[in-house]
Image: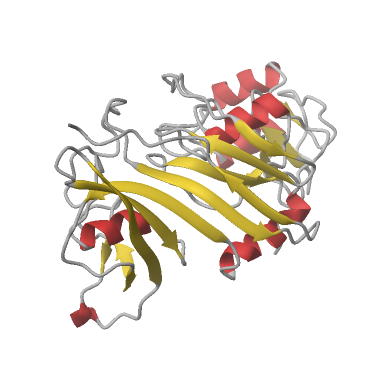
Length: 317
């Protein structure tokens, strides 16, 4: 069943979209009031906390009108409420907007800033920041990019157009170019085509791994890799161009590590240097940048091409 559209009358709050709850249609309701239903259906929030939310106008109907603790249970009604969000330490990096029209938004993301809410990050995410700043409730990212990776992130402005853009990524009709700094290697022919099956690392849920040939899994990831420039006083480092054909989680990081060329300051590959909940080290960002992206716009028919203005910090001396 398709997800019902959100009510246009229920606004964002500090960039956070409301949660929508549909009340079941029952012949005989066991709940005299909305408060009774909320306390039983969502017990992780104590009844007294629901009562306080209702008294403060933090639960509303589809017209945005506040509901109180005495509101009767109405079969089939849709109600909206906002999650309580714990205080988050600010991430002190900004994400400039490179392009915006009525269909697309293109942002140049810094290292360490997550794109979407999850885990310990909600308000300090690119999506929530942009919704709060621009007042665009239907804004949605069109592709994935790691929190540790910097560079281009594309967003759909209108929910009705989102699938048309995401289909480009699913059908591999988007040209994506990344840059990375990693060790130089003299004894490999370039460019390299890395083709493998990526799957979740059972030993660490936040990592991916390449399946071994013995597992007999068909390849599901492909990357083209070539050096652009040797770096470092002895030329022991290089700047690489990476062209992912597929878009698996951590694909570029795993492929580079599998070649024996781990990306500089990667906290997860080839070994875990920093856990997913450990503090970041701003002086050691992952040297991976989503440099450029190009595609034919499915809505306007225009050729779109965008380039990040960011530069990767060089290797150590």
